[in-house]
Image 1: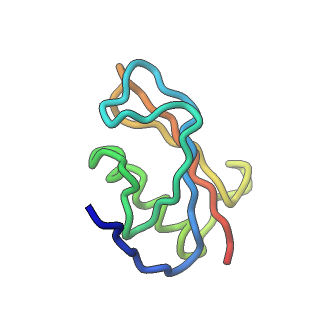
Image 2: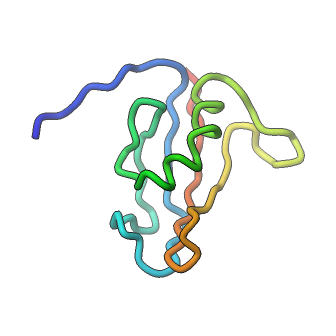
Length: 95
């Protein structure tokens, strides 16, 4: 399969797998790190990508989180599978 090129718009967003409880059906492991965007699911399952999409787009296109949440450039989110829960951190790299 040939490498696909995705549009490079907005800020870069990096995802890091922080925790896996059970067995992720997509094979993600603690420490996995990858670039993800509104155009590139980076191998996340559709359910998890759907859930994180609003946060991802906000980081990619300049929004931020309230100060009460901590860092306005990152957030940790959990997948909906409570038996095989994956925790991911999204981190913005400003261009």
